[in-house]
Image (cartoon, rainbow, N blue to C red):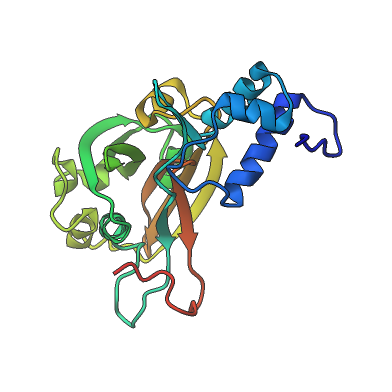
Length: 266
């Protein structure tokens, strides 16, 4: 078998990686299956062993394959976990994912047969310029950050940071170094700041060194960054920045009345 050339000339290992990627996406190998050994791929494609290794390295860096010492190369076993970033309430008066994000993560993991664990931190930091702008602050002003480090089946999944104006959080359970029973929404409701709307900003970027180390991802895997600015009738309430490894999460948004209730994770 020869490697497809495509329209633009490219190194042979990149074309081999593209064909292996195509075969993976077509379902020729299922999640967790072992990739043919290097000698088989070398013979199948009629290329040098080094070309095979470079192509496989590329797919390992993309998070599609994993190498197990002494055992071989395998497809990434865990499939993408869908996160319902927002979906309409299913019945009038029912809370949606804007009002209870922590509940949604737990329900989704359970529905996928995965175990979710969370480490929590609370800290006071100086606001970044973008966070300050969204909260109506001056860059460098103090903000309260409530951070959740989520893992599914011991695999790093997401880093969520909720940013609050220090004046809003002062004197409330948002200042406690532990999760608020019922979620931060409970603390906000207690001071009359129930969120009624929000805007999401979605970007993809490469992780910094500390992020790559925590997520345990290859150098070719980007982060999905979802920044939600929520508000009530009085103005902005909080900024929630959540970072996901792109090789293990898919953000789902629902509009209108989806047929078949695809966002029902009960």
